Length: 181
Image (cartoon, rainbow, N blue to C red; front, side):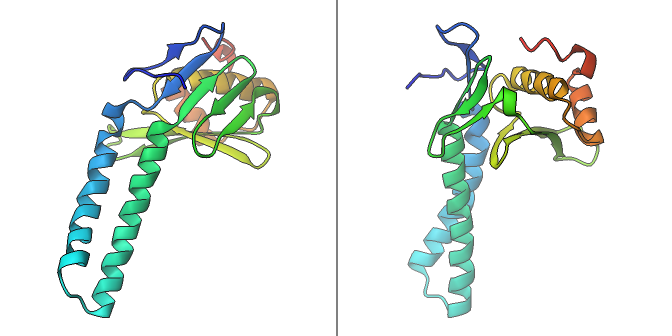
């Protein structure tokens, strides 16, 4: 497996192929949130005698935080490879999106503040039943969005007004999305 540095994208020896990964610095907050929920609930469950209802509630919360931790680990270990022909994700559930078959393109923005000055973007691509979601913390996110948008425009996919506005926020318009590098 290729080692990805804690930075944006890397270029493979194969021409036109880039690798993208979530850097540890981008995932640190998710690891801390998972630990902040899992550790206290785990300590309470293992050290304090609880009534049935309280035990079920705490066990449910611990399970939610454990799932979030597992999802964070899986995302952090996922490697995305983008080539001229496809976008491929490795990991526990490997998936591949062939550019020639792309039938879903959605770019969402999720704000963490009312003034919408802080937040993240999420790209969702699909081919038939296969879906691949990437968020803007991944290295080289703009390059992946630009390539996917170029394909979506070329294939004539109908994009929502929200997706078009988010593309414009990244500086990508239909007439200049053709250049993805």
